[in-house]
Amino acid sequence: MEMLTRSKWTSANGVAASDDTAVEVAAGNWPQVRSGPLMVGGILFGIGALVALAGMAVAGTHVAAATRAWIKELETPPGQLARLKWEQAKTAAAAGAATWQGHPNAKVRLVRRTPSAAG
Image 1 (cartoon, one colour):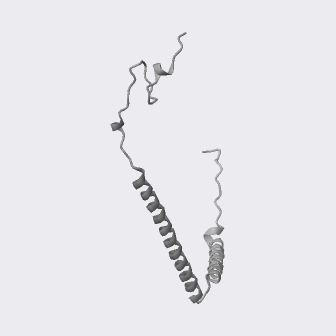
Image 2 (cartoon, one colour):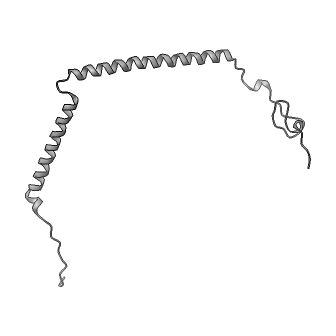
Image 3 (cartoon, one colour):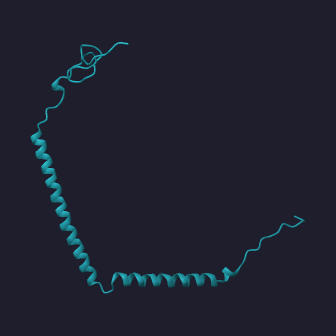
């Protein structure tokens, strides 16, 4: 069994190769990126996110206050209106069920015919 050395299988910059003539990656193949503009972009992005968050908080507070004021101006509070509508629905359902059950056609029962021996 042959003992493999690092120089036989890898090049100087860590790229795998099968022999001593390692595949070299030219430095020009990768884009040259400076860290300064990336840091400035990241900082501006973070500041923008904080400004957007502050705007959402201001708008949300305003909408909540306007909704509270609108509810206070209503003649009938929403909870009382919901109870009233629920009672109306229950009464209408009970009246409909009573009418349906009291209708003459509701009293008619279908009779199953038994097969006759002559048939």
